Length: 339
Image 1: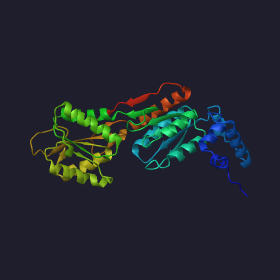
Image 2: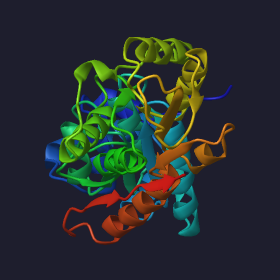
Image 3: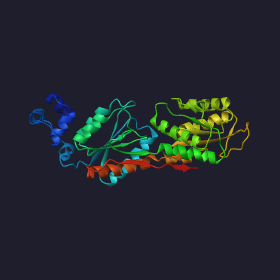
Image 4: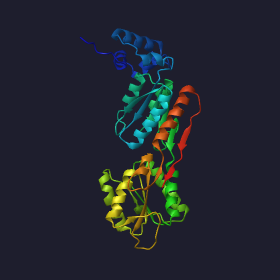
């Protein structure tokens, strides 16, 4: 009969300690008392726990495994970022171990423990939502390099790589202003989104810089259902016919907005023709992937490429793994206009 494989969780339960404590004992790192160390080793021996390659190599810091925690890999930004991260790590002979913490990050601690069990050399937090300070402290105690690669500014006390959302919105707004638009609205995104807040901050600041009207009723929060976006756009233009341009939170919102503009009887144009009853509109969207430039119809996007963020995150994590005492760095990648 096949025997059940004893895991680090079994050892932790038998010894009455946390998974992190067991990992510290196995790796020979951290400040663990002699009594606790003996209890863990005794439990491991009694259960017949076999220290796997990753756990054994962790002692020398050479497991070759890097962990990634994301909430949902289906999000285009994190799917693209993961590809960039994996490309760079594989070039250095590293293996990426992927975990998903759930839509609300409810499995975050379990993901962290699983990565520790694999003997990871470093961990990338895909997004910084929620309080992860305890996990960051654990990682630092275990000499595991940790970095945040996200869509917005969040964690200041660890290395991070992220796009410049404020600058992206400034570029998009100035692009429209330069083409004669004076009544520019915003559509999409959740009110709880830090990415959206940073972009709206750049949008509002640019309007004020150029002495243009900023009206809160022109900033429309997106629906959780993309199919509702066309109706939101059409209603916005019906209520405020002077609006000649709309900034759209992401690529999906931009396409939905395009349909809404068509429903309202307007057409898409870059330039502001002028006149109260002008029937032309301009749209600029924000996108995390370069493929947004290939959509039909061809629309203008400001992009912070998620794949490049993945590349940069991998490069920085490798540096931290090689030099754990290096100063914390916050790498902000500039956006690009794709007209």
